[in-house]
Image (cartoon, rainbow over all chains, first blue to last red; front, top):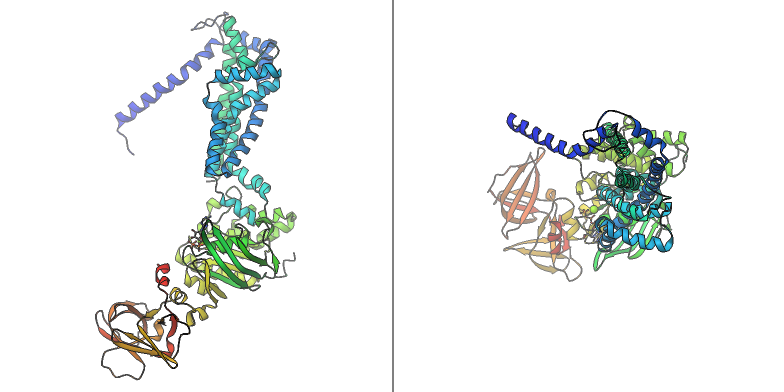
Length: 265
Length: 370
Ligand SMILES: Nc1ncnc2c1ncn2[C@@H]1O[C@H](COP(=O)(O)OP(=O)(O)OP(=O)(O)O)[C@@H](O)[C@H]1O
Ligand SMILES: [Mg+2]
């Protein structure tokens, strides 16, 4: 459709404004991380790398970062495996019970985080899971599972099940069919579920605040603790690192997907 | 398996197969013997149970009752992936994430065939369907006809003793369909495999098959060669489903060995009798009917008066639709060398009584056909 020049300029302007509005708060973090003074004031003064140094050398920060990486990696794998199996099972069930079960599994997304956190905390006190790796992994998996379920279910929705019949006629049993036909074709959904699960765990804060203790902190907990205690610009340095890491990850993923699509129209 | 040795086809026995969905009987006591190496077509209108029969043989659908033998062995309860039967689907069902070569190699990989043998057999199967140059393409880069040829290669590459095809050419245009019919016929001849082919296109059935099983409402009405079905239909449904036909209905009177029908005041006779109570109708093929101008003297035989309702020029011959006095229509085919008639001409429809097939009337034959 052809647009009038004026319309096009106006549209561009509006898009630009919305874009600035969306990313500006995030980008503010970048200059703040190079502040010379120990303050979170904006605009920052001077220039220094000291907060990045602090992040790398201060065990409070590096341990928290490694903990988060560890927890999020395990959660991503666990939630992806469980969520994919659940999505597959629900896809093959009768519609009515499947919808009920699906709603049940999606509740962690709907229930207020604080309520969930209180519940988990109460259970963890009894079972001594507070401040443990298992405790974090289990809690985060509950939260990440719905994202995997949704992503994989969407892929299964468009998957042509008649291909499984064809595979059977060619000699493939149920497991082989899943491994060689179904899984490769729903892989984009599984992959985005994996990413979502990782991200969900990596920046989870509400439940984490409840089940953390001085021996095991994740990065968001450390950020929160730091910012409530003093105005330490290391927070901004961490934010900047995460910003670039996610940009590269997502951008790279999109590039890869785009190339694959072009190679196989 | 030795590639030189042609694989022998398997025999199939369906014995009183029934399949019910809730209270609805999709198959109602289907019995059929298919000989090794035979090309059998299941023909019938939509919803008559052709696909269900094929799915039962392939193992995609389990039966409610009845026996099923493939190669003289019962396969009831054997899952589809253990039956070693090739299947070609109307919707191609190629794996979109695999190249043509990997699609065709898939059944061989599953069977643990080593790489060298696998590549040789894939190449041979692709050559057989004339797709040898396309091994590196992906299914989305092929036309419908090309995809179906790859699907055919994939279904025969593991030398199954039986190949099932469910309207494999249904989604293709007429020219391509006719060419692929010839290809399928050639491949059947070269392989010696038993083929079971589903279609609702009677011309396709006549062109391909050794024998045809005509389905109607979950039952088989008749099994036979195309010629048998055309010349000696067992039921009115078969007579009307295969080829063009004219059905004469009237007040019936049987005496001795002949039957007379009185139609709007005129009487026609056939030197035959129908056994049983049902009221008889006469079925006539278009080439057994001829047209004359009224009053023209003619030898003996039956005559009915009518008017030309439709005249169609078909190149080598003309096809006329004649409105009879009772309102029904007759279809006549006559060579261009004969006299030609125009729309609205009064004519006499002539035929020899011995050319008429007497069949039991069945009002439902008309409704299921349309
Ligand atoms: N899964 C099912 N549940 C209920 N009814 C079914 C099911 N599958 C088939 N049927 C019914 O069984 C009957 C036979 O179906 P079938 O698919 O065998 O017909 P067909 O002869 O292949 O027709 P077509 O030429 O349209 O493909 C139809 O009336 C159909 O509605
Ligand atoms: Mg069908």
